Image 1 (cartoon, protein in one colour):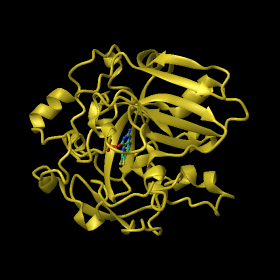
Image 2 (cartoon, protein in one colour):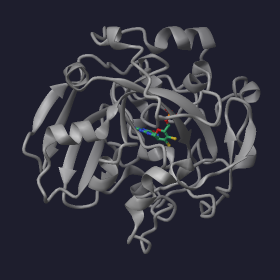
Image 3 (cartoon, helix red, strand yellow):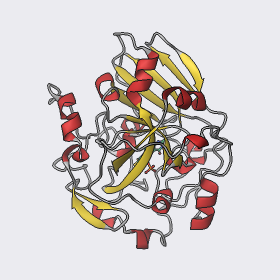
Image 4 (cartoon, protein in one colour):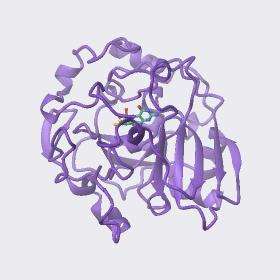
Length: 315
Ligand code: MTE
C-alpha cells in the first residue's frame, strides 16, 4: 500500500511548535479527538479501570539512565501524542479504551506460551523508573520518566527457542472504541525488534509514566520504549508479543514502504525522504538541538548493528 501525505505527525522540523503555541492550536486534522481542556484531560487520563498495581508507583528510579535536558512536563506529554487508533490529531482522546482487565498473550517460538493478566506480569517482574529521551521521526522530542521493566525480563520468562529471531508486538484491535481502526489502514498496529535488540538493556516495557500507571493516550496499560529508535517503533496498548522466525511487516512499513522501514534507528545524517533529521525540537521549550546518532544511546546499542551495514538501518 502506498502512503500519501496526510498524517498529523509528518510535519517538517520547522513546523513543530513550542508548548505555548501547540497547547493553543487546533488539531491539524478533524479526527475523532476533539480539543480537550488541560484539567479535563489530566482528570480523565487515569480515571477508570481500577488498577491493582497503583500502589507500586512511584517505583525506584534506576540511576543509570540520566538526561541531558529537563523532563517534559506531564501535561505537555498528555497533549501531544500519536495514537492513530483514535485520531490522526495530536490531541488524542483515548477514554473509550478499557484497560482493565487486560491480558497479554506471549506466543510463537517459546517454551512458555501464556496469556497473562498485565497486573500479574507487573507483580511477577517488578518495576523501576527510567528517564528516557523520546524522539519522533517527525523531528520533535520529549524526555519522559517511564516506569516498567526491561523487555529482556519478559523474554527470559518466555524462554525463546533458538529458531526465534524477532519479537513482534501487536496492539489491540477493536474498531467499536477506536475510530481510527475504521479507516483504511493496515490494523492492528504491528512493530518488531530483533532478538538482540529486544534483549538489549535499553529496550523497556512501559506500564507507568510520571510516577503512576501510564495514561491511556500514552499507550496504557502496556507499551514499548526503544529510545534509540524513532518513536513509531514503540507500540502502544500491546495485547500480543510473539517470538517469530521471520521479520515482521510493521504497520508503517505497510503504509509507507518508501519512507518507513524495520530498523528506524535515529541518525541525524539520514534525512526522511521529505525532511531533515539533523535537528530536533524539544517540545517543552521549542528549543532546537542537533539530533544525536542513536538518539545519544550509541554506547549501549551501536554494537547491535555491526555487520548489518547493508541494511537500511536509519529508516
Ligand atoms: N502505537 C500505536 N498502537 N499506535 C500509534 O499510532 N504511534 C507511534 C508510537 N506507537 C502509535 C504507536 C508514534 S508515531 C510515536 S511517535 C509514539 O507512539 C508516540 O508516543 P507518545 O504519544 O507517548 O509520545
